[in-house]
Length: 449
Image (cartoon, rainbow, N blue to C red; front, side, top):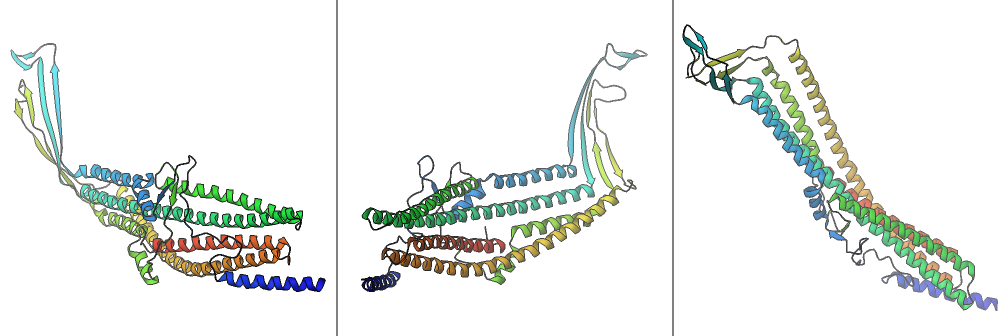
């Protein structure tokens, strides 16, 4: 009887292997739910039961740049620097002030029968001050205009950082959905195995140990699903905060970054179009300009002062109407060394700014090289991870068939389930790494946003 039983088992296993080979060519492994990573998903629901808003990648980035407080603060910073420029500019433009004085005495002041100072007096005057030659004020005006340009480029750099952060958050939502899909597939596999062991035990051909092992694996996968659900909620909420929504936001795009630059194109772009590089270069140019224009501190300046007035009643020393004008020339001979100290400080700042430009350019090129290498290796890793996941699913099919044929214990099935789950998780993580590498390359080359 035993040889016949062994012969029967060999036939069963051979049949199972043939079925597995046939199943490998068919969509979905035999008897085990295939990972549905690309299957259409039902609309995601929020905690209140309402559908979660779904946005495309481009829409998410645009919303973040338009509505996120960080981007709006950067725009306000530009306005602040423009207002500071207007303040500095005021010293180069004429000023006009009016003054009115009303005086009442207890009595007229009379000298030799002549009223020298009447009891009631009204004096109205206007003071006009106009800088005729003001090199220092003109230089400060130019330098303040430079700071407005620097603020604009700094705001663009802030927007770039915000866009990259939003892009990463968007990709994190996609990756988390992949991880959740992998956990659900693992749970479904474990559930199918548990139901089979329970059916065997109920039919009198199984054992309690197999059922308990299968139940333990099923509950472990259920717990993993809950953790992945929480992580997905956090990812969606994080994306919602970045796009200035008061609710979670879901990602819909999954085919991104089709057109990528070559290594040379990316290196050239990192030097010419990256906003952080341009901002550092503009700031260095602005500081260098203050050093070149330090000569204005040593030049004289000339102001025109004019005083039209009206006096009622007129008095012997002040007619009813009149005016007075004067030119005031100021020559700064010596100020205790203030200008020399300021010039040295500006030179030090200019050197620091130039070093900052060099460091930023060096870092930009490094970012491109790293991102390019990362993308190439991530693509290889993704291909290997997908193959590993496919092999793990085939191994799970074989383990299930062998167990159902009575050739192995369910320890092999549970081990295959865990390996299939881990392989699917690694494939989802490899896919995310590949997407992130493409985003890094576009950002490093100055092509995003």
